[in-house]
Image 1 (cartoon, rainbow, N blue to C red):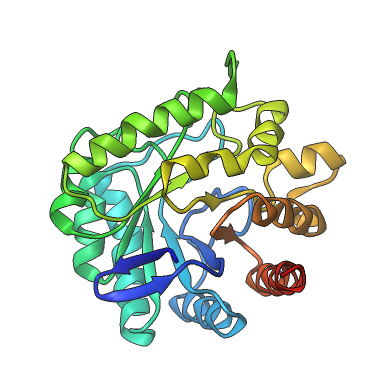
Image 2 (cartoon, rainbow, N blue to C red):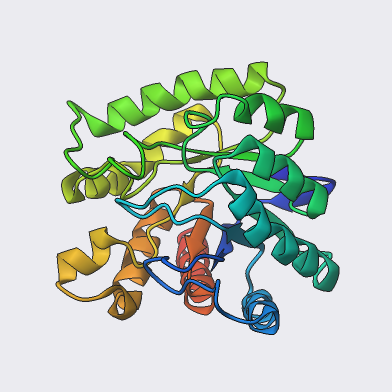
Length: 278
C-alpha cells in the first residue's frame, strides 16, 4: 500500500489516480484558460471532479519548450484567486500548485493547495525544497535537463534512465533532510529529452520503483505523442491514452492529464486487466 498525506487527507495510491491539468496561462500548448471567465474555470474543475479527477493541478506559468518566465507577482495574480475559489467550491478536492517559485508555493498552500508540483525540483529556486519542508505538504519533484528556455536545444545523456535515477537518489535525500515526508517523482517527459529519451524512460519507468516513491507520468498530448504521429496536440488524445496505458503497466501511480474522463477509463481497464491475472 502506498499512501500520501495531503494536509490531513490520506490518499491510497495502490490504485492509480488522475490529476487534471488547469493551465491559467495564455500560451499553454493545449487549452490555456487565462482569458476564460472565473465561471468557466470553476465549470472546468467541476467537470474534472465529476469525471473522476482526484487532484487538480493549477499552473500560472507556461513551461513548454522555449517559453519565457513571468515574475512571481504575475504568477501569484494568476493562480491565487483560482486556488481560493476552487478551495471554496470544492473543499474536499486536493489542489496542486504547479510552480518553481517558493513564494508562489507558500502563498498557494495558504490559499488552499495541498501539494507542490515543481518542474525544476528546486533547481530554479534554491529556497523551494526547504519551503515545502516547512509547509509540510507533499512534493512532486520532476527531472529536467536545462531550463524551459533551453531544455530542448540539444538534450544529451549517456544513459537517460540511469541518469534520471541517480538524480532522484540525490534529490530524495535532499527532500528528506528538508523534512519533506511525501515525495512523488516525475521523470519529466519532454523536459530536456529527445523522443528516444522519452520512450526509453516510458519503457523502463518501473526502474524508478527502487526509490520507493510513487511515480507521476505526464505525457498528455505532448510532443512525444503528436510529433511521433505527425498530428497536432488537439488530435493527440488516442496516442495519449496508449502512452498512459504503457505508463500504468510500468508502475505509474498518478496520470497528469488534460482529458480526465479518458484517463479514468484507462485506469479502470488497466485495473480490470491486472486483477484478472490474479
